[in-house]
Length: 268
Length: 251
Ligand SMILES: Nc1ncnc2c1ncn2[C@@H]1O[C@H](COP(=O)(O)OP(=O)(O)OP(=O)(O)O)[C@@H](O)[C@H]1O
Ligand SMILES: [Mg+2]
Image (cartoon, rainbow over all chains, first blue to last red; front, side, top):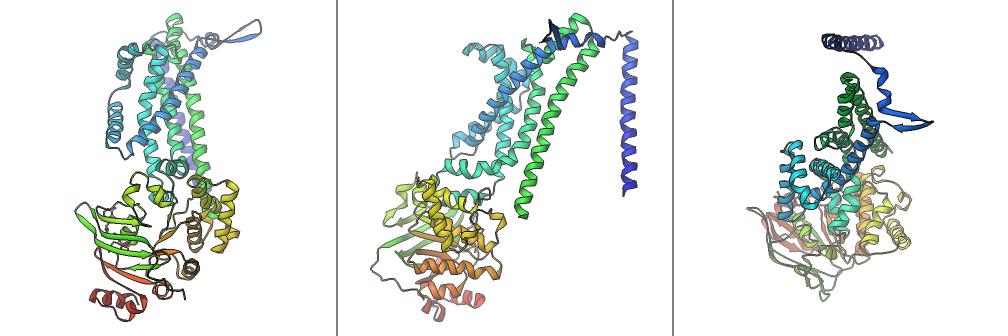
C-alpha cells in the first residue's frame, strides 16, 4: 500500500517536471527568437514604490484594487439579484416565472463582451452611468443569471416535506422560505457560489475594453511603456492566481466543514 | 376507551361533493365527510385511494376543484389568499415526520408559535416544553432531529403541531414509516390526545387504534368514500364488498 503510494507520487512528480521542462523550453525558444531581454528587476517598481519610507501602490497594485472593487461590488449585486431572480422563477406567478427564465436564457447566451458593449453604449447613457458603474453592473447582471441557477438548485435540494411542514405550522410562503428552506439550502449554495466569485474575478478583466484601469489593463499599459511583455503578463497572471486560489481554498474548506457538520449531526 | 361524541356538537370539518384532479386523473370523486368537534375519524383504504389527498385538501396543502370544504362552519374559499390562517388552526402530522433538520427539537416546536402566532420566546418555549412532556420526551428538547429515533421524531412532530393550539389535528399515516417496536409509543401519544377531546382525522391502518379511539371509520377506494361506520359496525359487519376484501387483507 505504502509502496504503491510512493511510486504513484514519483510518477506524478515526473509528469510535473516534464510539463515544467516543456514550458521552459518553449519559453526559451520564444525568447531567443525575439532576442528577448529579461528585466525582472524592473518589475517590483510597477507593483509598489517606496518614497521617503512610505509604501505606495504602483500601477499593478492600483489595478488590482480596482479589480477587487469591481468584483466585490458585482458579487454583492449578483448575489442579491440572483436570489430575486431565483425566487421569481419559482413563484406562483406565471409572468414572474417567464421573466426569470427569459432573463437567465438571454444573459447566458450572449457573450459577456457583447453584453458589456450593449450596456456601456446603450443602457448607461440613458441612466447617466459612468464606466466603473457600467463594468460593475454588467458583470453583476451576467453572474446573477448563474447565481439564480445556483440558488434554484440549492432551494430545490431541500426536501419538499420541509416546506410542507413549515406550511403546516401556519407560516406564510415568505416565512417558509426564510426560516426553513433557505437556511437548509446554504450548505448547498455556498460552495458553488464561491466558484462563481472566482469566475467573476476572472471575467472582470473584460472591463479593460471600456478603459477601466483594472489589473489586466494596467498590465497592458506597463507593457506599452516598458516592453516587458513576459514579465508583466507572468506577474499579472500570478496575482490573479493567488487571489482565485485563496478563494478556492476557502470553498474547499467550507465544503468540508458542511460535509463534516452534516456527518456528525447524523452520527450523534 | 374514549367517550363517544354526542351528535349535536357543531361540525368541525365538513366536505361536500369534493372533487380533485391531477391533470386527467381524478383523485377525489364527490367526497362527503362530516367530522364533529371532538370527534375522531379514522380513514383507511388501499394505496393510491386518495386518503392523503383528502386530508391535504382540508389544510390547503392541496387545492380542490369542485364541491365545498368548511372548517368550523367557514368555507376555506374565504382563505384562498391566506391559507396559513387555516393551517394555524388545523395541525398536521406527516408520515415522514418532516422535522426541521437544522433546528433542535424545542426550536422545531417554537417556530410556528413565534413566527405565526407572534408569541414571545419565553412563552413559546414554555408551551413547547409542556407538549414535549405530554409526548414524553422533554429530555430530548435540545437535540437535533437526526439524533432521535423515528418514534421520538414522530412524537416531536405531534408536539410541534400541538404547540399551535390547533382545533383540529390531521394525521397522515403517522406510524407507517416506523419500526414495529416504535409504533406503540406514537399511538399512545395519539390516544392521549384523543382522551383530551381533540378533533382528529387519522389516516392509518392501525386497526387496533381505530377500534379503541375512533368514533367513525371511513373506507376509501379509488378516490371515493365507499363506507363510513362506527368501528363496532365497520369491523364486524362491513356493508360493501370492497371493504370486506380490504379488511381481509389487513387484519
Ligand atoms: N402530485 C401529484 N401528481 C399527480 N398525481 C398524484 C399526485 N399526488 C397524488 N397523486 C395520485 O392521486 C392518487 C391518490 O394519491 P394519495 O397520495 O392521496 O393516495 P393515498 O391513499 O394517500 O395512498 P398511500 O396509502 O400510498 O399514501 C394516486 O393515484 C396518486 O398517484
Ligand atoms: Mg398517503
